[in-house]
Structures are given as structure tokens and as C-alpha cells.
Length: 531
Image (cartoon, rainbow, N blue to C red; front, side):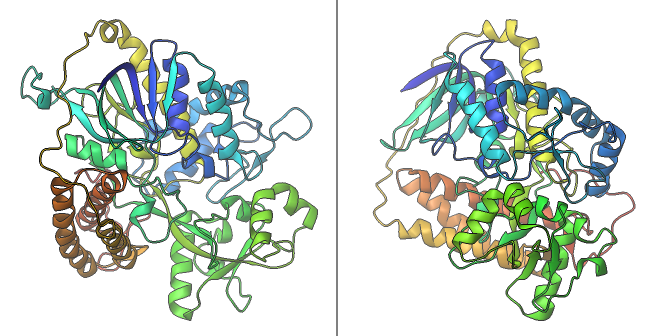
């Protein structure tokens, strides 16, 4: 079946929803999300959105903090644009109804996190992402021009060249016409034709065995874009959040950076505070430094975890500032007002992604990438805490303004007769263990060999293993009818290989990419590792 829309948005996080609410003023918007509407990384974001909102702060300071965190390879023009656009975007969120906390005097209650030189984190205690997602979804669901389709997973992008419609074979002439999308309940694959396609599928955390990400984070947008010929960049820069709750019954529960921002201290099993030995900023160092320090401590001591201790703060303050973290830890028998929290690093954020320009455009016409799916140049080699939600709303505005400018041309495009999905001779997959086993192999390989500290020999070894697994996945893809699980497996197999390729190309240690074979930073680094 073929569907037509003006804007096809793949993903339902803050980036996609922010763009949808703006684009609805121009035309029909269709959002597809592979699970429920709220199943996004945005919904789990605890910390907040970084923005200069206090007279004691400045754009120059926020820019400087971002550049320092990015380890020398941020695009400074992009950094300045994002930072200076922040206040207007936060005001928009307030107007939509996001309940950011205030200080009781008409000003936002701003928090501080690692790497920031001032308090500039607008938050809703430790449920910021949940509150933003809820407000944006409420606005989107009330719009007659926005349709949100749950349990629909995008399989591949639909290209003009593959539909026999490209005007020439010159680079830059390729055009995105939409995507093939599978309905999870019926497994039917539909053709969604669109004038503009937005990739906002989130990150890649499920490529790793341990992650703070939701189960949807399988890098779908990056994988689809790469298969379509879009440039991807800086996939070696995988941010491991330093403080994920370590508990046998807890799954992917993040302990916010804001806990350290409010005075939390990292200690080992013997109560020793260790961060000052690794960085002069101590517990407020950037995530790459903290994660690497914890990794070193665990490998040296053989302990299962380190601990994050905020119990020296008043219990009333802890319960008010971190209600979700407090109640969740308490459900696991940990009272954070009187005892430290066991924590370990876990895969958290992809600083690379689909390479875009300052308007969110990819190298394929009418295809945009937003949020964690994109590599805009803002984060460089390491994302500064809470800059992710900021980037999402700013680039949603950038993409909208670009589409608005082109709208007379876009509106005139005619509906085309496009090829339907063909399953060929594929058969139904009867043994799902084939998928789950291969999935587990990939994730464990990535965790063991392509983690916080890397070595070239290990990367080459995992590349050999991934090549074998990719051949298996290709056979599954061609021999069996697609299911959402098989679509995701295909994507993580590709993403794992692309991450390894990128890591092998960067012959230095910079930001999140730490190579024992090349411990120094190059004097003239490549800002983008492009594949």
C-alpha cells in the first residue's frame, strides 16, 4: 500500500516532535515510530537542557565549555549558532507547557553538570525528558495536521535513482522520496512517499551489551542513511555515561550527571575519592574523563563497581531534587540519602551520525537528520552534558526554516507511482533464536573490544568476527520475510562495523576515542571521520 504525506518524520523524540509542530504550519506531517509514542531516548533524559538563561552566565562561556568538552574538533560556527539560539528555543518549550522548575521568584532554577562553568541546566528535577516528551506529544496529538503511527518501523529509504526517476548520476543529484515502512502487527511493508524526510531515530546504544538507552536505540536512521549513500561521520566517538546504576535487577537505569553537579562524589569500595587524581575538575570533569577514570579504577581493583555518594547532602534536598532517582534506587534497596549508589559506565550517546550542514541537510536532497541521529559538528569528540536536547530543538528550527524557504517548490511536487516492496522468494523465519543469538554476539563483541579504552589489534580482531556475522545477517535478510527484530539486527550489524571502521581510521586518542596504540592527540586532527 502507498501513502502520501508532505513531511515524513521517522522517530518520535524531541527532535522529530519539535520539527513536526513547526512543519504542520506548512503541510501534512506523518510521524512513524517503531514502538509507542513515548518510547524514545528523550523520555529517559534526566538532566535537562543546557542554555544561557542567567545574567551571570554568557554565550562565550557556554561556547568555551562546549569547545573544551569537544576535544578540539567541534565546528565553532555550529557551536555559536546553537548556543546563541538556545534561549529562544527554551522559551518555545515553556510556551508549549514544559514545566521547568523555577526558583519561586519568576526565574528558572538552573542546575550545573560536569564540564559546565556555570549553572545553566533548565530542568524538571530528574524527569526533564519525560516532561518535554509529554508536552510535545500533547501538542502534536492535538494538531489535525500531524498523524503519529505507532508500531511502524522504517526499513529503508526510498531513493529517486532506485525508482528510475533520477535526472542524472552526478553526485548531489540523489533525492529522497520517503521510505519503506513495516507495520509491526501485520508485517506488511508500505511505501510512504514524502516531499521531505526527517531521520530522528535516536542513537545506537543497543549495539553494546550495556547501555543506558531504551531498547529502540538500534541506530536505524544512521544505518538507513548509509545504505542510501548519505555520508556518516565520527562514529568512533561513542559516549559512555560514567554513572549507570549497578544492580542485578536494574536495566539501563541512568544516574544523572546532575547528581555530581549538586555535590555527589565518586568513591571506590574503600571510600576513597579518586577523581582529583585524574582531572583537576574532579567530580565535575567531562564524561569522557570520568568514564575513563572509572574504567581504570575497576580494571586496577577488580571491583564490580565504584560508588556515587551524595548522602552528605540533606535528605529533604535529595528527595526534592532527585525524586525519580531516589524512588527507583529505593525500590532496589538503596537509600541514596544514607548510602552511596553503586555505578558503572555504560554506552550512552553517539556523538557521530549522519553528516549534516548547519541547516540539518544531508548530502541527499530533501533528506534531513536531527538529534542524536545527526553529526552536526556541535559535539566534536565528546558531548557536553545536556547539550543534546539543546541541539535537537535548535536544529529542528534550522530544518524547518530551510523547508519553509523551499516550500513553494516542494508543494508543487507531484505524487509519483513508486515501486512497492517485493519480498521475492523469502520464507517465514521459524527460529527466532537465529536473530537473538547473532544480536547477542555482536553486542558482546562491541562491549569487549570497542569500549572505553581501545587497542588496534582488538579492533582488527572484532572486524574479522563482524564480517562473518554480517554475512549471516545478509542471508537472513534475503532468505526470510522481514520482521522488526530482523530489521533491527540488520541495522546494528552495520552500525557495529561502521564504528570499528571509524575507530581504526583515527590514529590518535581524542575525546571519547582512547587508543592505547596512539595515546597522544595529533596536532592537526581530522575534524570528521567520514564514511
